Image (cartoon, rainbow, N blue to C red):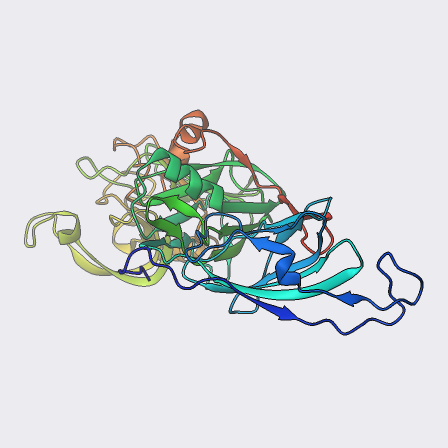
Length: 418
């Protein structure tokens, strides 16, 4: 939650000497078996942190001339260690992991004075409180099966509007998409609070995808810092593509490139034409109440309707579905008589419902209707060309979803981040 007090320090640095017990058999430039000389390590090191440590800046620990650092550990109140890196000459250490705003940390330092003396010390510091924290709500919601169709975009809804181009770049850098297999994809800023991510082509069948927002402690813009980490994982199912030909009054479903079934349908009649273009399944409802008033048809007019509809697969938020329409079976395959939905027999609608899932593709062609909106009425993301898509990234180009390389703090070895 945003700290309404604004920027405020939470405490200063305290150093406390921790006396080392002599280590039998260890030496530090002396004769074999000579005991380690204990020193006040607090006199050998310097911390960059002040009473108002900026969480967007790394914490550094520096050894005094002639001394060296042998170990540095920074721990948060939750017990998590903040990643860091020791320089090759052991004269300095700095955090590589992010610090949280308005948080107290403990720093444990071991040092050597270069003359056979060793010691340990503990320091405490606190980071600045943030005026505002930026949170991210990630989509799709994978609380169900976690399996989606190949057309499913990833979405990010920010808790604050981000308008500044540099701040948008910080947001994109904090968003990580990793998939197996890796693909080329890109971010698109829909507006100041919403971003979508999609591959250049549809997700490959069987892909595992993870999305994370990791901006904790990062300065996004003046007074705005990254909030808590958010993450989700999902899996991509078979490539299910449906084409509705409004002129032929026919629906064809393919799975992994093979035609599985073709069925007669009816689509929107003149004045209520079904939208052309690529749509993505948004949800499925076993039974839904449909009313003409929701699309601007006055109750009691010749076009009004209010009825229960079965086996409804939604493709737009404005109410376009693929659903059972037993009242129009005589027109299915012959003419378009609906108010914009794709209607079919109850048996066919049940089969379609059972053989599709959220994220699958439904493309309408040869309709007299307008094109599918790219955003705001469902996922029309695939109607935007790839070149145009990547131009709306704050970083100005595509990204790979291969696992990035990160440095493991304990060993300094390069390891993939999974």
